[in-house]
Length: 291
Image (cartoon, rainbow, N blue to C red; front, side):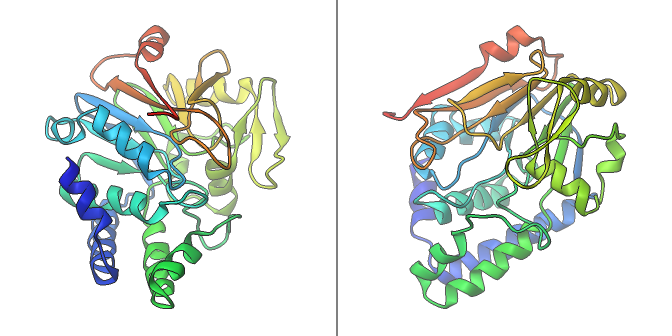
């Protein structure tokens, strides 16, 4: 396992360029309107925002014996926001892309608002400056390659046991799951930028994009589409938090600055059985900032 980490940490400019191109081709071949439907397998390891916290990412993967895990028909699902803010953004995204090239059917990377479409710029977005700092002006060329790759990442997924996976949230209108394929600008903004709140209806977001969606919006969306739970990232918290009567689970999988949370969370769940809330609670994993 450590040999993969060492490999990622040793990649040079040309190596990274080849890695982006190879993984881009895989994601492009998988593209089905940006929605992955009915993910199957034995288990899924679901990981929230990383934001360049490569150390915690490695710890989560190592704790779950990720190589053995991937080779046993299990899935690792990332909920986006791999880059920006943290000290090792390049290593974080490259590790996931490399695993995608090795285990393409078992690695799923859902885009976050920090893997943006051209019409929804995010801030702060220091990833390109990290690349330029490390590789000089050639870093800008790598950024363009990464940016093109972001455009073929899926933005939502469902599992065979009725989970809905997304980075941010759902729109205020009660849409059918098939409407999420090839979304327009407004719908993409809701998926990448929205947050739940403990009320009803839809409120403007303090983020300046997306909205805040209430319990009634969640219930209608889940019932209409035969789903049981939304699992998402996007919001800093102490590893995880629930909203809307345990129908929405937020995972946050990095620690430290600039959010100053001390605990990272992830979820390890079966994909071959229906999930009760007690099973979900029992399978949330936590890592402290000291680990």
